[in-house]
Image 1 (spheres, rainbow, N blue to C red):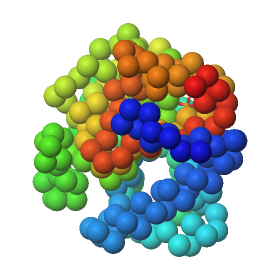
Image 2: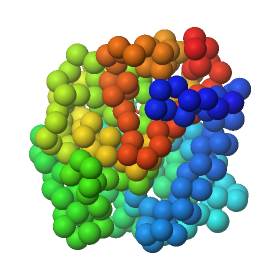
Image 3: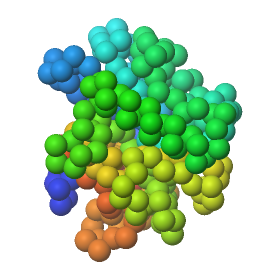
Length: 252
Ligand SMILES: O=C1O[C@H](COP(=O)(O)O)[C@@H](O)[C@H](O)[C@H]1O
């Protein structure tokens, strides 16, 4: 079932598996559209449950039909831990998605895990600036911040997105493209994260939210015009689409 709530399209499915099926088709369709329009597809991944919900992309027909070599992969946020740690969003994405598909390694933009959180954030932002200089990543005409084709965003029960948490100042960053946090309320504490000006410069955003523990935050973000949760600040230059299962939508 689809409906419009504010400036968001909300798609509701009976089960998490229904979300997973629809999400794979949505991503494959966008991949085809962007590659036809400009020859490449820049995708930003979250960590958490999102990667498992992308599982149908690693199977037929998408494993073969998607033009994976035209993709570039970035992270919305990353834990500052070794890339082979079980807490790393890179490792999660590698194990659940990237190892099954044919995206060239030099188009997978992981953090430098040898640096401090501050250093890793500066290094990731410098890498993005280099891609802008080389015209691989465009700047949004509207905001002047880099504009990714698709951002896949998860949400925590506290309404956090990326590593932008309630009661932490990073969510108010207006100048930097990438910032860092050393006291994340959700472990592990050291992380880097894209900032809201970058998130909200994306062409397309999918908020992928499944599970009963998220129902309260979903209701607040989608039905309370005065919501102060970080997820309520997400907007896109194109379409912002929420994918919900019945559990996450149970309080709407
Ligand atoms: O810590 C994180 O949490 C959020 C939400 O994760 P989920 O398991 O509740 O889906 C995730 O989007 C973010 O990338 C991750 O670092």
